[in-house]
Length: 102
Image: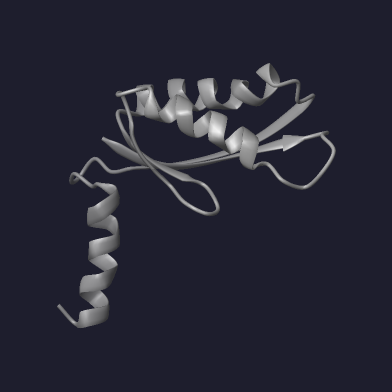
């Protein structure tokens, strides 16, 4: 299992808002069941098998092109450990435990 963060940036369109394209990406994420996800204000967290994450990232990267965007810049960060299982929640909980002194 791996965790990841993906940000898709459409380039070459008029205006600053990208919420319409993010809605398309959100619908794509909702309609798949291979990778768990959590959308955030600055990107989307992913959790699953690395092969599925890479495939989903390619799908998400292609979506703005289908809307006529001439250029897409996608940032994908992947974190995978072989010594223990991690989830999106366990990574956050680990920091919270340290803050509480646990």
